Picture 1 (tube, rainbow, N blue to C red):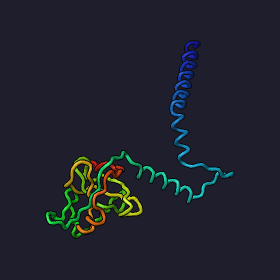
Picture 2 (picture 1 turned 90 degrees about the vertical axis):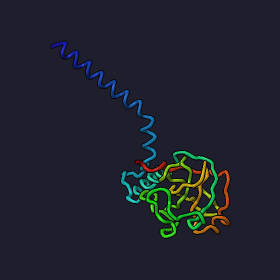
Picture 3 (picture 1 turned 60 degrees about the horizontal axis):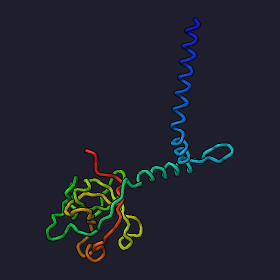
Picture 4 (picture 1 turned 45 degrees about the vertical axis):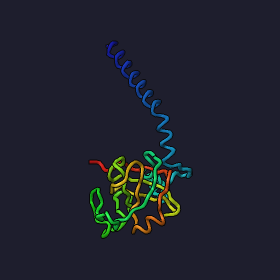
Length: 184
């Protein structure tokens, strides 16, 4: 009987030690993540629904628009109506941009611009970049075409004239990769 009680006490102590170790190792990350969610300073601890929705939306967008990595490259412009262009994109769904236009409706990122890149960036890669002469707000684009090399990103435009006069060649531009290609 004494040995049974002794084994139960040892087992309880081991369990307590494991619980303490588990919480002490994860304490830093738990404290940091709990601060990211929300601070409720209301005396009755009630939460306004709009505050909760906005904080969840903010966390979602921070995760969605947080760059996986960045790279420096060049931005150029092209159009689907150029002399050697067929109008069809190289990546699925291989749409005809002469009929469908220069925008793509992505299920996660919404309406985005279309770009061509080298095979350094897989089809479906989502990029974010800022060029004030094109747009005041950052441009979100998806890789759906090929035809350039290295770190050159070619932005699909309405026509060649716009590509040449408005975009030209923007060197040493920082691109953020938000999503790296589609999963197969």
